[in-house]
Structure formats: C-alpha cells, structure tokens
Image (cartoon, rainbow, N blue to C red; front, side, top):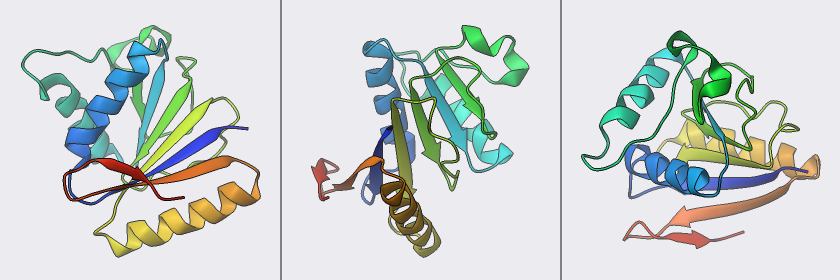
Length: 149
C-alpha cells in the first residue's frame, strides 16, 4: 500500500514547502509527479519551480515541454504517471485517485481554507479505509512539522 502523508499548511505557504519537499525527493533518487487542482495553478507552480531560489534548480516539465519520461518532476492536472514517479504530490485540491503506482503520496492542503480542510478529512477517511498507511503532519508557529496522527 502507498504511504500517504497529509501536510496541513498553516504558517508557511505551499510556495515555500513544495520546492523543499521536491528537492528531498530528488535527493533520494525518486521521480515525482505534482498534480494541481487546475491549469492556472499548474502554471503558477511551473513558474515557481523556475524562480523559487537564486542558487538552486529543480528539473521539471509539463506536457508542453517534451517527453514526460525524461522529467524527474512532472507537473500535471491529470491522473497520470508518465515519468514513472515514486512520489505523488497533490496540491490545491487535486484528488488522490489511484495511488497504486506510487510508493508515497503527499497531500498538501491550506489549513486556513475550510473547504480544503473538509476535503482533506474526506480523503483521510477514504484512504485509511482503503488500507493506506496515512500520517498527518501539522506546522507549528515556526513552520516546523509535527506528526499529529
């Protein structure tokens, strides 16, 4: 079963957290999929990964960038795994769908958004019922992650 990590963002925005988690995934030798909730958000994430740091680069691409299988990090809004990713990042309301192809799924949600909280609770219930190993992580005031469940 896929390990599922729920990241409850409260004090540090996704724009700071996502690049760090993607860097760690690549350091482990993993390939990643980032699935966004919509095309506008996908474009914003694409731009973010080009500009988030002056001294770092995250190799990534979308369908418009060429062969997906060559991309260590592939950005999409669809339920697909064209680069053989080990880890799936779900952002901005993207639903888990089929997690079979992945070792790990990271579901990130804005803790200040009631709709996002409700959706995360429903995903938690369904994924636990399906037998996935789910853990819940919440940010403290300094932005550090604490395992809560």
